[in-house]
Each structure stands twice: as C-alpha cells, then as structure tokens.
Image 1 (tube, rainbow, N blue to C red):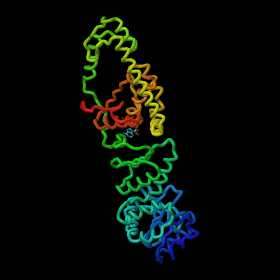
Image 2 (image 1 turned 180 degrees about the horizontal axis):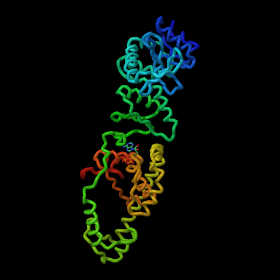
Image 3 (image 1 turned 90 degrees about the vertical axis):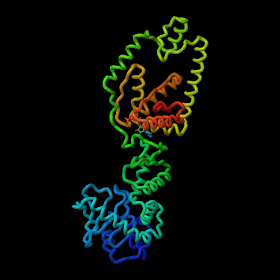
Length: 412
Ligand SMILES: Nc1ncnc2c1ncn2[C@@H]1O[C@H](COP(=O)(O)OP(=O)(O)OP(=O)(O)O)[C@@H](O)[C@H]1O
C-alpha cells in the first residue's frame, strides 16, 4: 500500500509517492496523526529513522524531521534555526530548546537525509504528481545523483513571487552559499518566472532587469578606502588657479553673450594663450556653429525622450527612481544652478556616481543644451571607471562610446 494512502485525512496536500511500508515508520506516522497543526506537510522522502518534508504557509518552508536514537522523540528541525536550535518535538507537540547547536544538528541530520535520499529517493518520487512540487522534486533528484544541496526551493519561489509583486523592489540579492547546481536550478526557476539572474562570485542577484557583467556594489574586494590627496597638492592646485585667474580678466555673462561681445570687439580681446583658448570665430561661423549645435541638442533631446518612453527605458527609470538619490534630484539641480561648488554626501549605493551626473545631463538635454554639457566623473580604479560608464550607458539605453565613455590611462 502506498504511504500516501496512510496519510489521507491527515496530510491534505501530500506529494504522491509510492513507498514500501516499514514497521519502524509507524512512530512518525503516529506523531503526525497526533499533530493536527502539521496537516500541510508534503512528505518528500521517507525512511525508518529519518524523513524530510516541506511545509507551506510557514516561515520555515523547508524543514526536516528526525527522530532521536531511541525513538523517544521526533524532532522538527527548521532550516533557519538560530545558533542554538529550537526544535518542535512532534511526539509531545511541544517546542523545546535543544541544547545542541545548529551546526551539530545540521552536521548530523542533514548529511543523513542526503544519504537516505540516495538510497530511497527513487521510491519517494516514483509517481510524484503534484506539479507544484516539481522544483523541490527536481532538487531532490539532483541530490540523488550527488549534486545540489538546494532544499529551500519553495522559499525561493516565494521570495521571487514577492519580488514580482512588489513594485518598489527591483532585485533580490542573496549571499547564501550556493554551488553551481544550486545557482543553475534557481536561475531556471527565475527564468520561468520572467526574472533575470546573475552570479557575482559569492553573491547571486535575481532581478527584473538584465544585470551587467560587474556590480561594484556587490564586489567585496572592491577597495573601500578613501582617496587621500598627497600633502601640499591642494596648495599647488590653488596656486596654479590663482596664477591663471590673475592673468585672465574675469568674464561675465553666459557663453553666448561673451562670445558675442568678443566677436563684436573684433580683435580687442586679450589672448592669454591658455590651453583652452580657441581661435576667434567670425560672426557667420559662430551662427552656423550655434545652429549645428542646436540641431544636435534637439536630436539628443528626441533620443532621450524616445528611450524614456520605451518599455525598457520605463523599466530602467523605475529602477533608478527607487534609489535614494532620486528624492533629492530637484534639490540637487537647484543647488547646482545656484552654486559653483557643491559637496554631496550619501550612503554607499545611493546613486552619487551613476545618478547625479545623469540628472545634470538629462536636465541639460531636456533644455536643448545637451551639446554644451560635458561631465567628467572620476573613479579611483580602472575597473570601476569601466563599470560605471558601462552602467550609465545602459541606463541611458546607449552603447558605450556614444554619449558616455571612459578613459583609463589615456586610453578609451
Ligand atoms: N554596474 C552596475 N550594475 C547594476 N547596478 C549598478 C551598477 N552600478 C551601480 N548599480 C546600482 O546603482 C546604485 C547606485 O550606484 P552608485 O555607484 O551610483 O552609488 P554611489 O552612491 O556612488 O555608491 P558609492 O558611494 O559606493 O560609490 C547601486 O545601489 C547599485 O544598485
């Protein structure tokens, strides 16, 4: 008789299975019968001395049951027990504090389950029919062949479903230890749910949007030290600036005004020979150039609007709006328009590097001044310079090298 029949009436959603009855199983069954709270168990594998099951609608989605050596108790072992294991004794339906540590529980119980599955898994899943358990079952069949130890697939399915439902969340980041098979398994699940996944060293990300090759924010080896300028550099830069400013008369007004007054003064302008000084354009040339720049600025504006209205652009905007920097966007742009120097501080990952320059660029492009806007963003490391520019280009729906690029050691 299949064991599933034995559980009828007690366990409502049983994974269908066909197991050979053994007499030593009866204490476990008796415990379950007494414990009405545990009606929703899915029996995953059964063995005289040990079996594992998953429980729905519970904080602990996967747990296992074990008995003590002399059958005087049957323990419910939640997967997420703290440093000191809290176990439920099914025989007495009491929760007891175990005086053994979680590590001991795991090291004795979990390998045992694994061993048992190796031999008995084929019985446990012979005629499995509950489609909703297919992931768990596949995980277990992987274990049979000595592969993945992934046991909390239900928990993961729940996490990913929550991610999909939550509009404010864009990704789930997991630092739990996973081997390649675990990741492939979860990745497959995420894929089926319409999510993207990516593994970065020890970190796995499940996301609503495609992920780049490198995430500096997830790189534990990324240097976090502050950049300290060499002693005296400030003074040196100050001195150069003062020398430059004292040679050059201060210009007032905006660029077009100054270029107009320069042109109209026809050669009366002082040429200080500075590195950025350009040849004086004629009025006609300047007009033509302004027209070209304006046309290009309008093209940039159209392209930006087009990207922002596209479905991918909308997704990306949604993601960017979830960053803390977005709340300060207007205040920041106002401060920039009113000041020459602004110091912005914010917690790591809030968007200082990738967002603030974009807010400026986007507002300039919207105002049809895109071609007059140049932004330089420095990074202390080559890899972060490349990653940031790659990321910003992706956020703008562009290829690297269009309006966003990088320069490392004068290359790029
Ligand atoms: N290459 C990337 N791929 C995917 N997401 C990224 C990437 N770079 C940054 N992000 C995301 O953008 C957010 C903002 O990153 P950004 O680098 O702008 O933060 P930050 O405030 O400059 O951080 P830090 O102080 O560490 O430099 C991060 O939280 C991260 O989620």
